[in-house]
Length: 298
Ligand code: GDP
View (cartoon, rainbow, N blue to C red):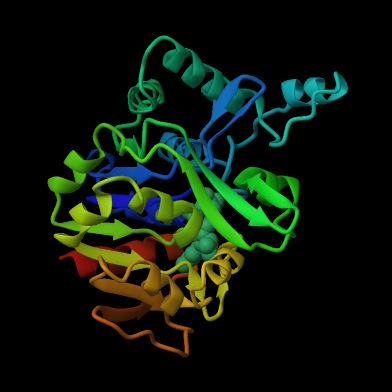
């Protein structure tokens, strides 16, 4: 089973899927357009969350970082006057430094992710969407800023005029091959602009998905995302802020859209719409949505 993922909504669905599907049957293609180097360590926020989820050590209150991590190095950096944009835990930082070391030694991000996953004893296949550097840039009235400067530095408060992507468009070395070997692809409830959009923009990915049955779970409930800046980014890109807007983002590849049962407006188009309780605020709710998705797959 193959799933396209960002770093919050889709990992909540993966938490549920793991109850019914063996990890070694799961392939997760993960967004890397929010990656950023901090104090010399390559932080891949979405890959890290997926790694920690499968390793069983994810902080599931925040959906980033390692449960119970300490912040000695982060605080020492701050005391030394080197402010870090993201609060990085000590064990989390070890992942970033190991990743950086592996890549400096000549490995691709795909290889480094495989290596780190193996060290954590993970049997799921976690594939970066690209091995090249990709950046999501938010256009604001004060200029263009990196996604993390907008979302973490500015708390997402700036007016968004547009979203651009810079950097590589070459998919990760195993991405197209992984898609080719599946009949159905699940797009998890992640941000369609800043998490799934970058994956779909990798060369050949949309084309490969047109031949597949694509089931997408909406990250919106009514006219708002469950969390994060999806509403602002959808609006800036000219899409409706609703499941209908999400469907518009995927219109050329979408076969089935899972909307929330609370939605009063049902999008229409060349795809089937099904409704479920998509709010995964507990493990049980992740599992029941996962069961629903697996039912659709069968
Ligand atoms: P990011 O990398 O942290 O932005 O991670 P994602 O793109 O994976 O996750 C952000 C998106 O997940 C937001 O658009 C949220 O609306 C969505 N999301 C978070 N929790 C849930 C949930 O419980 N249900 C649904 N349907 N969407 C969710």
